[in-house]
Image (cartoon, rainbow, N blue to C red):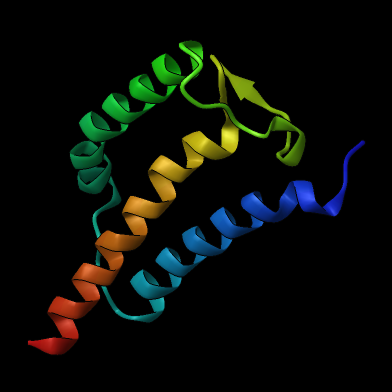
Length: 102
């Protein structure tokens, strides 16, 4: 049964990504998202591969019943979105710190 608790992780990721957009556009930064994704892609691929392997080997598992239930390879869509949203957030925070603290 689908409950509101299934949305918590997804809501968190949406808030993180919206924060990136707010920091970037309202905060006056000009983060080049294509360059950021190009820089993050190798790291994303390594960690997603690691997650897939570790899940297959039984080292850990995801509480799919507490997520949306959309799974790609053996990864919930939220886990894949995490590897994009959170690093982008930290890039935005880093760029903000450089802009406002220098």
